Length: 177
Image 1 (cartoon, rainbow, N blue to C red):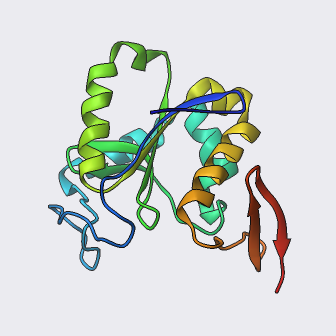
Image 2: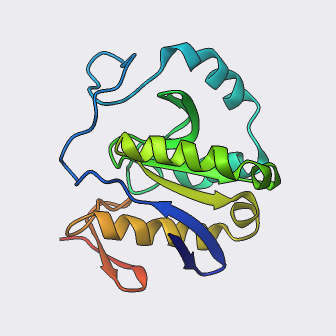
């Protein structure tokens, strides 16, 4: 499925699992995190990738996803899941965000297999082009807010406290009640 929002073209893969249905038990899980699918054997490679981030990864992490900036949801970057290291993951939302650059043009088959495997594990895979993060960060945030509005009912936590109000066009106000 191709979703176009603003100037962004993103492939969004929906999980076949219903929200709250639980996930497939993963291997090498951290204690106390059932269904996390954490792969300890990829930990050192993930650590290396975090130190060698792309410009787009740094921008998205510093401005949107890091330090629970996106509506209080925790994201991890360069996180090992199953046999893969994903760019960003929110385990609570069951979202994987992958940033794609020019190198991914020749990897469509590998990316499709990765997306299918992660979807089977219960994750929603969101692919965003590096160029969109660098040149249209507001559009990327708007797109993520739209996706968040679809999975939250009725309202997600607001970054400023209170409840966020949503309409068909995205976030438009904060209700402090």
